[in-house]
Length: 206
Image (cartoon, rainbow, N blue to C red; front, side, top):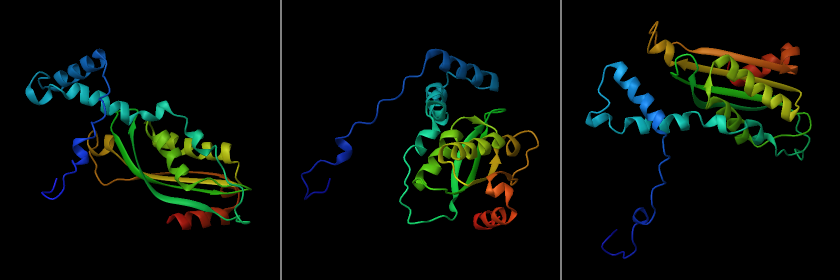
């Protein structure tokens, strides 16, 4: 608050959101893991860690509590005769692999060739995040995003390409950083017509 302003700072008026309670059994499991890893869960720096980790994983896996298809429920049919590719690319996302629960960090390109309706572009990103915020493998994530768009928008074609780095490969096991994995799923005209497939891949930058 400045010396010339009698209005309280908004930060003093807004209470922080209530913290999500973490069940005792979840915190106990995290303490067991900390202890098994070689540290003392009772030391000062780790006292509140079990609750923090529990809340973090509730957020990491928030996709289990939503149906990504709901984001495609509202469509627009007044598109002025537009019948070319709709593409949203370089969509950042983060997930966790189901094998080691290590981070998967990457970007996605999602395209479809509309038949008679389109959807708000932010909804494509929301579909991706809805599936990504679950324990995943990249191949299934790619297929789930493509299938969801195909089933609910009923376009002429769908193309999804995901490029990601996997913590289970970079931070453990083979410990090979700087390696990216690319997966793709083509449906409809992008699968059947090589010219359409080449066009969408070129627009995506591949």
